[in-house]
Length: 166
Image 1 (cartoon, rainbow, N blue to C red):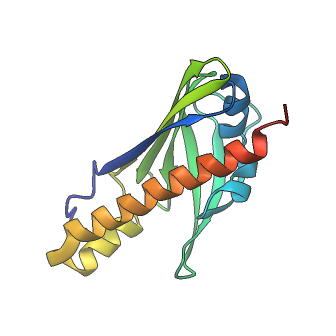
Image 2: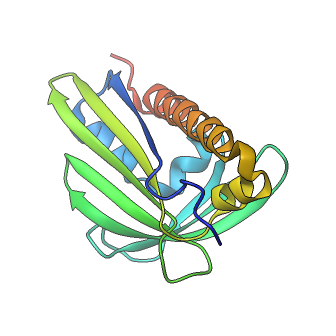
């Protein structure tokens, strides 16, 4: 399938969260809780016992149009409590996305940088761009905008549920 500029497309957010870094680290690595926070991810479960490079988890996403995906993810970076990232696999042996968090300790708060990079494998984004090649750039930008909005929404919900009354 043609690329249409999908591979390497990236987006991200930077958000100050009112949680200490260790509490936030516990949240971002709680894959089984993403269904509580994310607008698209409705479940996640660890396949391996330890959160370390090479560990795997499953996740399911549900989109506004009702389409669902089930993916397997492999942790590519786990540097507690500063960096956590994973590659996403569908039916191929090549990842179609990479997600990553970088955390910066600010005492009672944590600066979070979350990013998404597409490719090189096949995904719904590549399929969507191929359906309307003349507007592929617009399709890609629209999806990247949705992903950034979802990141902010997820982080806000995570912060809200993890924050303990003081």
